[in-house]
Length: 232
Image (cartoon, rainbow, N blue to C red; front, side, top):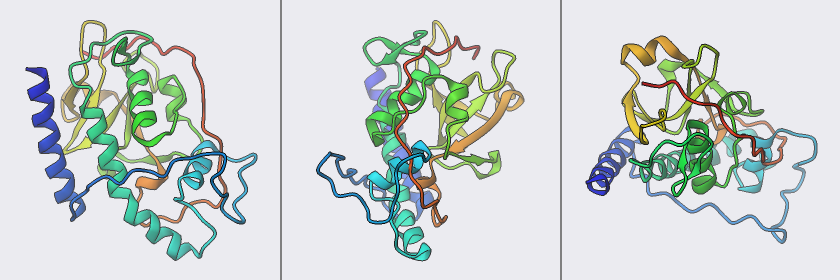
């Protein structure tokens, strides 16, 4: 039942993403990163933020003029976001588990978002929801400007950024809610979520046409366990 339900969600979501982007979003695989891959000329990677370095290593930032770099990001943004969201939908029905970071163990909220970003993009987010919200290089996003692939944050434990999920479009987000729950899709227009919304963050590569910073950073690795969630 869960498999059929997840498959239906993925089909509906793929159609919605294609319509919203004005094109069929067939995810293109990101180029593998290896020690032998040539570094981009003139793009320093020491002492800079994690997201920026990740983008350079994936060929999303280079030293060409800003207009050309922005166009390159615009061309790849829809595919990257679609890949991320469709990857997240594969985990519908996986049980919640505090400290969990995999399908086999179950997920807590930040373990879920971390796993999806790593599996679909190769970007390893910090372990806790609050750390993901404050990750250097991520863009702050207003609720009215949300796009698929954005991280959405909520105050569910009487402190900011205590819960996180992934926006999938049409005012919906996917998350791992709480003990006894499973990965599921929720409507952000519900009073519970509206009252607790703390903000959103976006990977710069998802922001079509925006000029990106020229500096790059390291991929974050932080194994600290997450906090318990308070979602209904």
